[in-house]
Picture 1: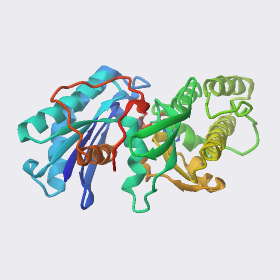
Picture 2 (picture 1 turned 180 degrees about the vertical axis):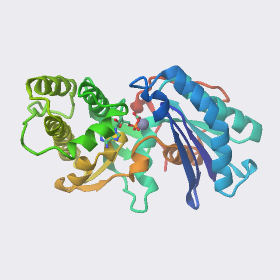
Picture 3 (picture 1 turned 45 degrees about the vertical axis):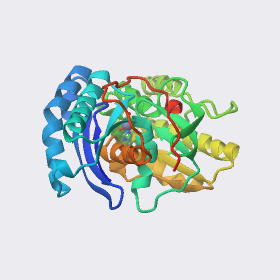
Length: 335
Ligand code: KG4
Ligand code: ZN
């Protein structure tokens, strides 16, 4: 079964074709970073308009690169939420219309399920059951995954998501958009142990997170410093270490609590080098997708949609994206 995947939940247009026999055939991404840079963050209306501009040519390109014609597709998967409503509508309308015209099924995919299953696209794929650490711009969750579609929340952020904390802290330090990767880059030039930042919520039981205090801590530390470029790098490093340390310690706790020995890390913050370098500290098998599949992409949507379509998912031809959508509401797949 060949499934076209379409991702348009935020500021990246991602399209891919996944073949259930041959694996991922092709994927392409158009990033809107330059479009939003002047505004210091994503402008939802501009995002929707740009998805409209890109989606048709990108789809044509991806299908051609896969050596296929549209008529060779057996299904279409699209991100149905959570995300920016207007942006979601573009992908949903494109996917549903294409499926209607080709007389093939379309399925709406949960964006975070896409992230969670992304490590399955790699040659060294994790086997179920596992614990997933989902760290993106909008979500930070630890989830127990006994099977695809059955997700039990172990803990989540009570305020800012990890990626959001990176982005907001970057802004406070005067870095450009997108802040997360820039802050991480600056941290590479920072010296270790110059500043000691708190590890939020570690003194409390459970697997919940809280990152908003770290942001304020960073700002006051910066204001009290001599504000040299090296100070900024040292502070960025201390912030990054505090976030990474907290994520790792809570993941360790989640593994212990569930008795699982496999951890999957997915979502944009999974691209963080410091986090990836420290994964071996966990006494578990850890799986993280390649960098391009940590951040938003069409491949993860094509894959998650292919699993659902293969398991017989069928939906009426109605366009119903959801800006908010708890992961725990999904149906488990009998596979
Ligand atoms: O998964 P993603 O591409 O989009 C969402 O679903 O939100 O995640 C984007 C988030 C942003 O907050 C971005 O700053 C963060 O991931 N991010 C990083 C890095 N690369 C992306 N955070 C820390 N270090 C990175 N290298
Ligand atoms: Zn995402």
